[in-house]
Figure 1 (cartoon, rainbow, N blue to C red):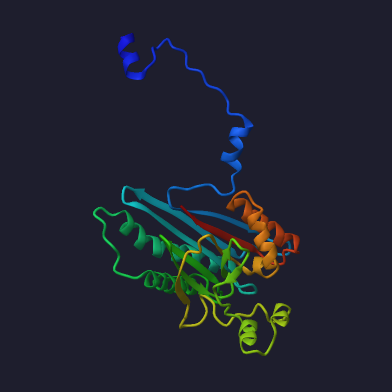
Figure 2 (figure 1 turned 90 degrees about the vertical axis):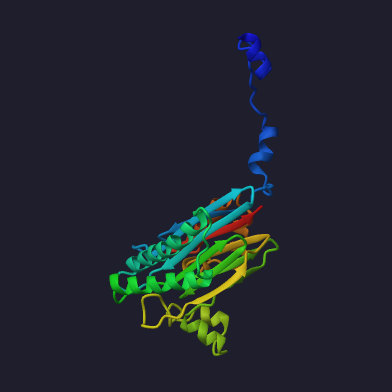
Length: 296
């Protein structure tokens, strides 16, 4: 028996197997390398949220779902990320944002997951933009039913492979952040001051302090005919996709957003840095943020 064991495993049962701890020099590159190599293409995400310093109720809701299907035929990263900000001053703002996030996620995942994981593979008969529109329409109906008179912003990103489909209503935002420090808002605020700024009637500086800067002309749960902005882009590489409520972008300048991200050891820490920075600036509103990176 001893000889058989030795032929199979190269050692006898009596041979002692020793282990030794790795030195700090060996461990450091594994843990702290800021540019690791990922052979498997995948999405990495972090999220953060805070009540803020001046609010008693959290009217923000967020959702982050990240999945990877990988095998001999390659990998298929999938992600669904949503930020919703219940409208302040309206009854049940926190209910509206929560129902909106839950309903759009339920609608989209019930369509996408059976298609992704079916055997044999059965593609859905809708485009990703149609899937998003259907989700927004369903969320509009549910919010109007469950939280009448209220409303919420909603910014959602549906990611499949390198393709990002955005659905947007209100003044939460989606940003593309490049490694060179460039930060670009890819959504358009559905707010009164943003419209006045687009018409050239006020400057961006005036918009930031305008007394009606929080007034929206389009929100989920409001009106009969909702017209969400829905579009598709390629995932920024190298770079990040960021979704956030105005509790972040309204008080933290772009250079501080970028610094909070690049100085962090991972995306979860970066999100916490962003929340901390917004609170340090006074935290006048609820704060929600999601950061996503495509690696590999």
